[in-house]
Length: 310
Image (cartoon, rainbow, N blue to C red; front, top):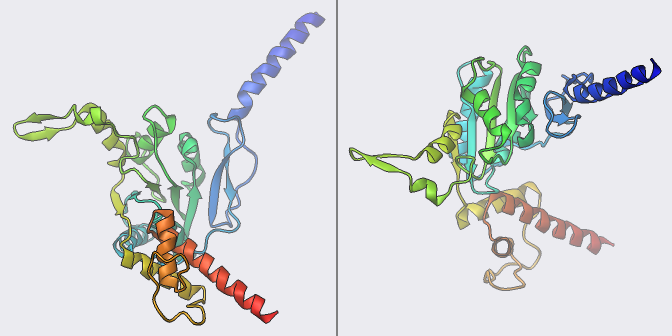
C-alpha cells in the first residue's frame, strides 16, 4: 500500500511540473504605467506563462528631434492619431537601413500621445507565440495599445512567424479595436530571401508570377497595412542631424576652431569634420551615428571645461 502511494505521489509531482508553466502568473499588471515588456517566467518556449512588466523609465524622445525622416514621421504620426481617435488605422512595418530612426519613432509617439491614452507593449520575437494571451490582457482596457516588436526577422520554421501572421490578418477572431502592431526590421519581408526562390518565378501572358517561396515570404509583410521604408542618410542630412543634437546638448565649436579642416585630417577640430570622420570609421551615416557622435563631442567639451575650472 505504501509503495503504491509513493508511486502515485511521484507521478503527481511529474504531472504538476508539466502543468505549472501553463498556469497563469498571479502578479497583477500595473495599469498606472505607460509602457510594459512581456516577460516569460516559465521554461523557455512554453506558452501562456507570461506577464506585463511595467517599464519604469521609458525613453523620452520627441518627434521633432527626429530629423531626415520627415515623410515617415508624418505618415506614422497620422496613422497613430487616427487610431487614438477611434478611426480606422493600420498595423505598421518600418523597414530599412539600421540606425535611421525606426524604433525611435515608435518611442517618440508614446512620449507625445501618452496623455491621450496611448500605451506601448514591447514583445520579443521569441514571445510572439503568446500574442493571444497578450491580446486577452488588454482587449477590454480603455487605453489604446501599440504592440511593439523591434528588429524583427524570422526563419519560416519559427513558431512566432505563424502566430504573427494570424494576429495580423488570418485568425477567425477579429483583432481588438484598441491594439495595433508596429514592427521594425532591416528586412522588408521579415524573412531571408534566396536566389533560387527568385528563379522559380514564371511568365504567364507577359505577367510575372512569383514562386511559392517568394509568395510565402511576402504574405507576412503584406499583412501590415502601412509600409514605411528608411534609407541611408546623405552627407548633408547626417550633418543636419549632428548640428541639431549638438544644439540640444548645448555645445558648439571649441575655442579657436575657425578654419575648416579636411575630413581626412586625423586631428580635425571642427564638429562637422570630426563628425564626418566619426561616420567614416563607423561605416554609417545615420541618425544613430549622429547621436552617438554628438554625445561623444559634448562629453569632450564639457569634460575640458570642467578641467579648465580646476
